[in-house]
Image 1 (cartoon, helix red, strand yellow):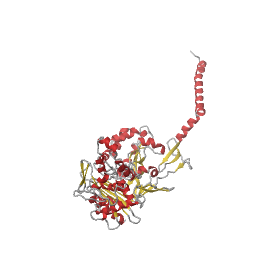
Image 2: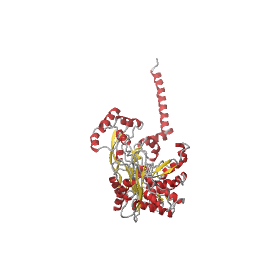
Image 3: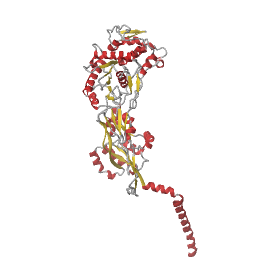
Image 4: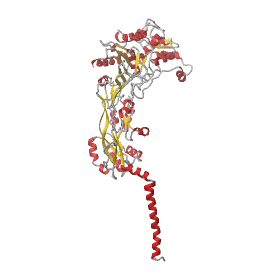
Length: 581
């Protein structure tokens, strides 16, 4: 049994040891790991608040709105503040008609972003929000903000639309200031000019206490204002857009493009059917999305640059110019007698006019759109010559328009035919079909329009563009386009031009339905057979010269019939409206 004195000494040892340990810990905290804990303390004391810029808006050539911003009430959820996941899921699902699995998916995918606000519902009706907000006290994980959302003033394909950033995009763009809640351009101009439209983030450094309250110690030099996105001014004319949409046959699919031949400015860009891009400004349901993508008329398809079709007879001036340039024909040369078709090898190729056109020169062959003349001409050319010349005229090549996803089109070569039909395939028969814009050749309506714009521009091809200039607080930028001379001499160019004049302005020309009194319209009709329907695709492409208002155009309707009877009359209405402006 220890006496009191001995027991006191024994108890002193652990107290001394504890004291030494405390001293070592204090020394370690204050001296050895001072910098580490100082940084941690400062990080807990300082907050960097990101200030997001206002996205730039889009206007037409007359500064009329195409895409603007409007107020939006958005709901956010903070995963780290969720008390009862099932209850908050039930509340959101019942109040805002959100599918439970979508809510649970958002919570799960952001489970490690404990104290970050995650956007879960966009563009909420104000009255519904007010009623719901009364119950937010029971759900500390929910909050709402007044922000901006895109408003698309009319249905179109060229502007594209915004969409929520996905995981792959976020991993790639987070260093550029994008957050997990960011929206960015998914296609069209919104994607092409994402950097210009978005602007630059700003920031504000604040000091907070333990509860997160701003202590407001910093007064100067600890913030950077956000740089708002640039506004885009386009070459598009809203009045043309609206008029073309109004007169375009409601039950038809197709495309219309109007261009300034001198500078490549696209004045009208219409693809039908179209869709309302504003559906992407709110939480689009799976049912709405499936209805859109499964629509047999495919309204999401931009037929101006994503749709590829056989050009039919609007392609004939290219074959004619090749024959002229190679001196196989001239303006007076008459080829095979058209009696309703032409025998090539063991196959009889029909002309569209069963009674036959007789023997014609190149000018009248284009005027009457005689197939036999071009059948015969193709037999005097090689497939490689036709393909090279086609591409030199900027067909089956991307135009370079300032949009995403433009397609090239297609022109076959001998290897393609052998690979697909075997080594015994008759190339001669394939050339005959290609010479009238049929068979495997595929082009976009924009390529056709740009080619006819070059014919109007004395053979100078100019890259088409929608963008005219951008306006920011700092500077104004403008578009610079590329140019290319078509491979046709001035003499032969005059022959082609004369033939396009006769198509519209002389008796029995196939494009007479596009004729107006003044100014002179030049053009070519086309009726392209296709394997997707019983009716032919209807084309009419051409141009007119009117002082400072030159215009090139293409009117295309899928499975609509003959170009002369369907597309040409529509072109005349459009031209008349254009002149009235």
